[in-house]
Image (cartoon, rainbow, N blue to C red; front, side):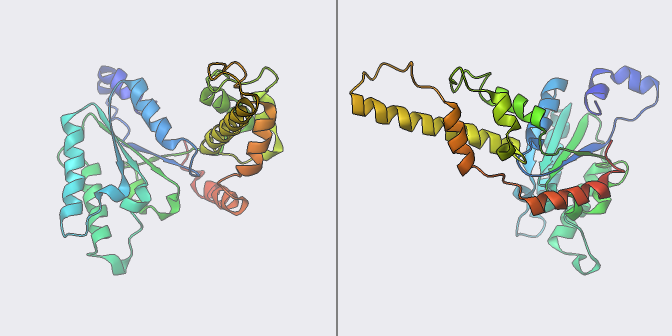
Length: 270
């Protein structure tokens, strides 16, 4: 809403004297769909989308990184309305220290802050960023007028996992699932607890590979026709075997760390 409303209702915002929200930072464990969410927001708002991975703008030569930052914002101004999405913002704008003054990272952070503050005007350019390590982002980036809306994108709940599995499998049509396969039962199983969206995608892929391997073995053994694909479906057992191989990518200790971070950023989530 922070991005879509100013785009859809610019005259209303102008009449009320409300400046468009400056920026949003999405944070949470890896593989939870932060990038997909940013793309979906831009698509829903029907505006241009520029995605930049933080490390892409870093350059060993003096002045080149700052130039890359300026170029990125200029591209967005030329394409407005536009969203600039900084993935891995913690790599681009790490915490500065007194000893880092004058370093490449410090100069890059200063350049990003200058562009965020809109010295040359930032009307029609919206900012989004994502980070797995929000505690490593320079606090100045998160101050009001910059990336001042902080939103957590956490691990999916059991219901979320059901919805994600339905989306990944296109409601059980690709890959085709056997009739007795219950995505609800799979998503609610203890083995799936702590799975991220990326883990669920890996689970479906692994189950599909197991089903295909089994099908090809049976076909070769029975000398069946290559054209008969009616029995090529993913079974419940394929998912069970896949779950033994695919473990949550976000381990227990890491989940606890994110829980602690959530308390730190709770007052900023809105």
